[in-house]
Length: 120
Image (cartoon, rainbow, N blue to C red; front, side, top):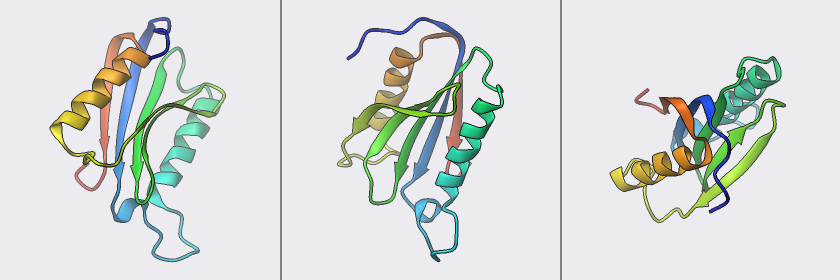
């Protein structure tokens, strides 16, 4: 793993499980829910809404690899880690792994967690 970054006052993990109809186009004119929400997070970062906090997103969309990403203060998306798809995003061991990785890549004084999917 890369070196541990500097500690932030707060880091938030958005756990996006979109390996379902939330990450699937039903019509070519529709905006996929997960993509639309990622764009909204980017706009918030550009607007300065992150402050000194870090925003990390675990994103697993249909037909793609699961990734741990950071939404930067400039609104960019930086991939921190790619996960294999052999394990379900809703398994306990995958969630534990992602949370451990999140804390490694975004150490902070305080942490937040948002679950994003049908059950949220």
